[in-house]
Image (cartoon, rainbow, N blue to C red; front, side, top):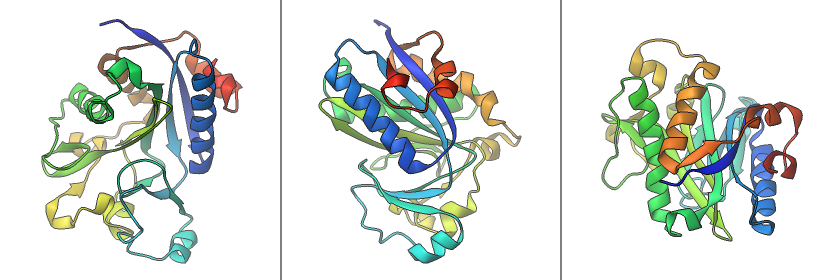
Length: 238
């Protein structure tokens, strides 16, 4: 496999809307300059519920005013899928890379997003896989990672969210995550699956390895430093 260079940006306490702006800025730069490398943004968001193209908000169990009272934002998202939660204790991974590398096959690419999460979990001894007819990475009947992707000008964006130790109550008390009824499966996390606490920074090496091995990427030197020096946009992608 030919390895392709990618810039990795790590962002903590990132408002969801700022994450979207950052993705769009990087995507625009890459579309205008074919020489730019791919970019993988790994974000820990401030609390937000997002609804993808497959949803209409019908799987929310509370109103928007109640969400706001909890300090949780609500956003319509351009990705596939229905409602999900983002917040502290969860990594949301946004690979912004050219679909030409994967035969311009968005379905194949979605499966690769799942594979990133499955490989990450296996590094911690957690058996994980897929469920027929559903997206994401599952351990038994419980979902550890949600997937929702989009593409513009044959560049992929959005990606997958991976639960390390988020507040899982928010997945079940505020919504039907991904529109899945409780009797058909729950939501889980790395901490719950392994029975011990994992700090967010501790999990980054395994996560980057899983992404690079699955997508055939190599980390450009100085990538993570760019996250603290630059606010986003093209500066982080060049």
